[in-house]
Length: 325
Image (cartoon, rainbow, N blue to C red):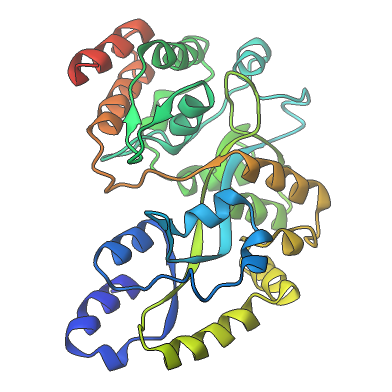
């Protein structure tokens, strides 16, 4: 059933069967910390190790200002495209519309907001509350919805994107060249490159064109509160966090090392520099269980614009009216 099922069941009936250390993704880390299944790392992880990571990467492992996870294998999202089909650089909204760049992304989400739209909204001036809940701002929403309205009208965005929940849904089409561009995870991009697909990279389309991304990844966590077992687990973590070892492991699984020193040693220095810039402005995913009514309402409005049911102005007004903002 997976590591979370093991943690939930074994912690109550067979705590001795639990691993002392394991890897969790952001969504599971939040759930495990809330359930008391993992323990803070603030007192045991060296400041020097964290200083070699971007702030966004360290925040990936934090829950309410406590470090519960040590980031190890990262994953960002960005555009992957065929440079023969789109030779002109730039993926701002204006670039997409003026140069006729067709693209796809995972627009379908059931209980929260599309990662891509989240990045675009925050990049354009949208914001989160102190508790991490989206704040609906009509003018910002209207501008973002307007881009999608124009992209659909110009035939650059097919409403089929509402059926995509992850970039794996169209990975094969990108590899085969039947799609010119799509927002993918860094893991999928590295898989495409590994298989010699004609693929270039750029940031997710935004109004400003400035690099930004959604960051996720795997983090080491402690599942034991026993000091002796934590000390042994820490020795293992320090071994795994050796720069060369971390780089080799992440290269083998097509993920990105959390330490900047390890990232700089990647085979493609241009891509490593691009990822480094993305991490400077990265945001964390909301997650399917974030419980934000605002996120769900905005997602519904986005779907209505892409499907042609509402105009950009109408969709933005609908959000504000429903939330009483």
